[in-house]
Image (cartoon, rainbow, N blue to C red; front, side, top):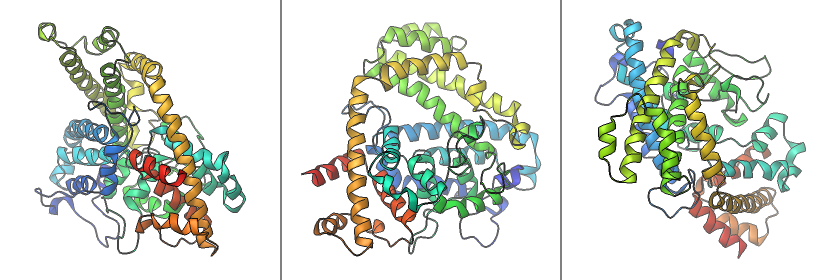
Length: 444
């Protein structure tokens, strides 16, 4: 892969190239992407979607929205620091093409901002609930009418693939959704493969999948334009990652490791003394002891250590990326950056504590169970109504139910797979509160 292609400013529907050297630096294309994401309805809905604690009434607990903003900030720093090194290594990128170090930050920031945009309500249990509706629920009856890959898309419903669809799928009058640059879409693609074969290798890029069968053609167009390296057999589609996807992933990993831990501390799920011990291990080489000892509140102490920890992890991720940049460009770096971090032991310790004390806490499990049932119920009711209506045999209940669907979900779809995916997309785009409300209505 080469950086000139990887930094493509092309957008869906463009007939010619967009050259960086011709860009208006006050309105750079990659920064336009950030703005388009911020103003999108799908992004706004993240303010009422679970990050760790479902339906929390506590102000300082993160939602998907605040998490995404923080990941974007970390991603921007990662991108700028890497960009500075890349421009120094390949000066023609600036001298001939006009690229700047901050371009890298703008690309990573936009991709990171949208990294959770396709996630269903109620956290990762939402993805599992959609998948299990088809694998072990009432949706099993559709299996024989779908191809293997279409079926796999449904039973392993994936927020990353859904996010790619949110960002790129056309509808009447809206071609290419919000029409992001291909560079940002490439950085967004953490798992640039289809749902089958499932986990064919230990490569981090094969851990999940990144697009639905309905989006396959455009996905391939983006990957081809960016010069991403194909890595699957003739009958399967997959690519080595866009290099900047490693930075998007690192930004997410850094934030959920440190900030989810901080949420647990603020909620009392992790004791302060215990937490400080683990955080100090991450910052022992950079902590100003006199400053730390002058802080009198738990909030200030945790905030100080969090800032130092994130800074250390950013610098370490940049180091790993630059040291392995040529391997990454050759598609020969099958690891997440944090896997090679000098702080890996400390990261693993914090994640273990978070799993035990936060993700598996009674409050989280009880609300995830509730969300699980809500999503299953909504899918069953809306899919049944949609399929019945499409076949010309809707009940009065089906007609009433479909009347509450937003207009964009009343589109006619060509085949069963697209119909099922449309209803999955509808449910996945609901906020936690909206899902609760709809479930209350249909269960009354």
